[in-house]
Image (cartoon, rainbow, N blue to C red; front, side):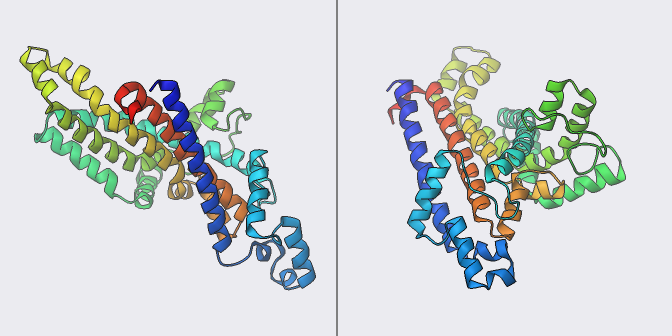
Length: 339
């Protein structure tokens, strides 16, 4: 199967998954106890049958659930996610405001995890059962075991409060103007605008939350690359290359590492999607205006349109990343396109 046919098949599967996710999330939202009308109107107004009925007609809540879903999908195809009950703004507007902050944080966290985790996994596999391997596995264990909220508070206490090495919560220093919006990611916008003082401030504010959010990913990447590379180094083709006198560095880099990177790429993709979806605690601790904090506020106020918008964004992120990983798979190993 050619790469284009393979990509088309994967794209169709991805769209089907998104459709199923939209149905499931809409159904779950209908089953949640309570009514958004109570939040919209308040307790006194919601107790008035006439006012309540008028509000239900306005938001389409008086129609059967299947009809509501069809209206929702029709609006979704036109880029309309509805109006947030809590912010009184279009959900799409809210998403465009908060999503870039989470993407910026997730990218920084993934870069940190890759810069540390990939070399650690490589060193651990090459030095299997020796002290570098034990150190790498210990670091990976710490990364996957320490709770995010505890690590975040620990970083704030030592590096901000005690040592004054890094700035505290927020995206910029107090009083520093936010650069004119281009992408919504402050560090990128500052660089594009040539505002290097703002860029330096945004990067320094990004260091602690990126390390805290990326600590778990670091451990996962290290362990996955180590186990995959150890397995590849034990394969027959590696032993054959060594028997032919190929230098050990070439054996590792050109032969074993390429095959070991295939499952690692999967982990990288899924890790990035999980960083987008799981930044709630990190964003809360560091006062980072992202989609995580927005989703928590929506859940507390039974803001169904906002919750559906966040859920679809997370689902779309996972599906898109999986699609990209599948394409890379097919390019690295043509045998995968046959399955």
